[in-house]
Amino acid sequence: MKQTTQIGMWALLPAALMALAGSAQAQRYDDRYDDRYNDGPVRCESIKNRTQQCPIDGRARLVRQLSGSPCIEGDTWGQARNGVWVTRGCRAEFIAERGRPSHGGGWGNNGNNGGGWGGGRGQIISCDSNDQRMRRCNVSVRRDVRLVRQTSRTACVEGRTWGHDRDGVWVNGGCRAEFEIR
Image (cartoon, rainbow, N blue to C red; front, top):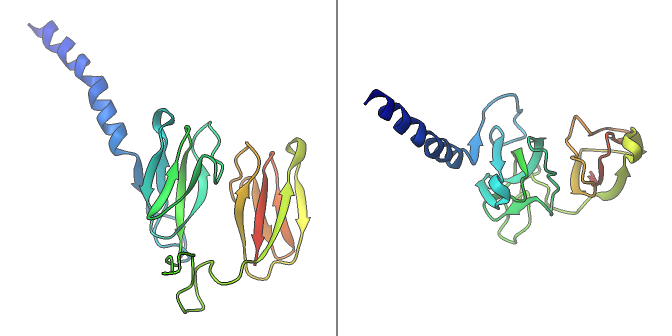
């Protein structure tokens, strides 16, 4: 009888683990992010290469890739009406930039001079790390930089494989992308 009960418990373990995995598709974390963002990061995961949508309040920005599969904006992750979507094994943490979608459909600043990426687009530049080498793309940065399209299969993660200062953008480790300079 004791052996039968133990076998029954082991048989239920995979089902319990799958239930936990299904409920962990989108997790919100509150830690080290400053007031430019609405909340802490949201983890969104494509399990078994399936498309998953996760709620996020604002324009999503990838801050940490968790998967071995590439997370490329517009290809394996992107903006959804009320969040972010991931597919083909992309698992990552995203943060929401301040600013709500305007009624016109874009990411406007809704009449204030604060957050949001609305209004006119800034200058778009391409910056490529070839052969995993560091490259600096010199351009004058007045406010900030936003990755708008990753063109490499290697992840472009701000602070790790790309970054910026007031004199330009740097890329490293095979990151190739287009950046909006504002």
